[in-house]
Length: 96
Image (cartoon, rainbow, N blue to C red; front, top):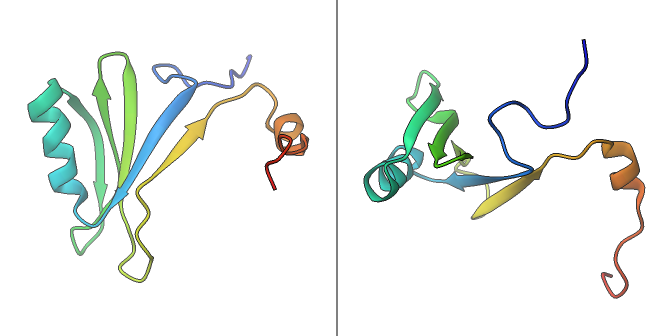
C-alpha cells in the first residue's frame, strides 16, 4: 500500500491555531465562514487537545495552549514528500 505525504482531505500547508479558548475560536469560522467542525478531542478538564474545522477545501487545526506557555498564535503544518531531505536543506541566504 502506497503512503502519501499529504493525508486525504488536507492541503499542502495546514494552519494550526493555538489559543487559550479554542472552543470560542472554533465558533468564529463556523459562524463567519460556514466551517464544518470535523473533530474535537477534550481532556477531563474540558481543554481542547485537538480539533479540526474544514473551511472550503482546507482543514484548520486547533488546540488549547498550556497555561504555562507564552502566547503562540499559530503554527503551519507543511506536508512534503521527503521530510528528511527538506529538513536537511540549508537555511535560505540571510536566514540567520
